[in-house]
Image 1 (cartoon, one colour):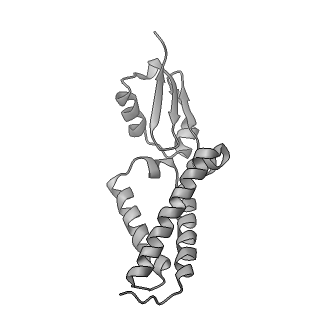
Image 2 (cartoon, rainbow, N blue to C red):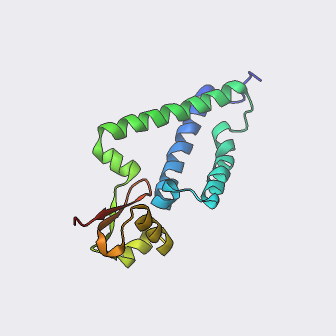
Image 3 (cartoon, rainbow, N blue to C red):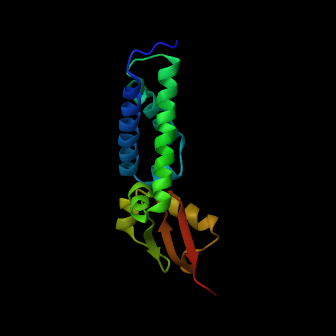
Length: 154
């Protein structure tokens, strides 16, 4: 239970590598994957965690090894949060930025497709903001996957 099969530093290197590679994969998968989980998205996240578990522990089942890997992931996440809060360039690289997806009641089809949004996503956002299409001034897909609608002033 306490005897590790690997040196302590290997857990840290493995944790760092897995964290960074998963961060890149999640960023490449698009905003909607991160922002609003469907049951399918949740299943993918759960399977991803299972898929990388051996990468984190290298087959080591010790308590100490698991705690080192977990502490490494928490430390890396805290470091990334600190860096993104202090540096706009790093924040944009890690979190992304908002994308204008529509203006004056019209959604930009190519942008909407590139962002992997469905018509039902757009209609839902309009309903949530209680904004009929003709009254929409601008629509943005935020970095967190939310759709923000700004209304024309009356």
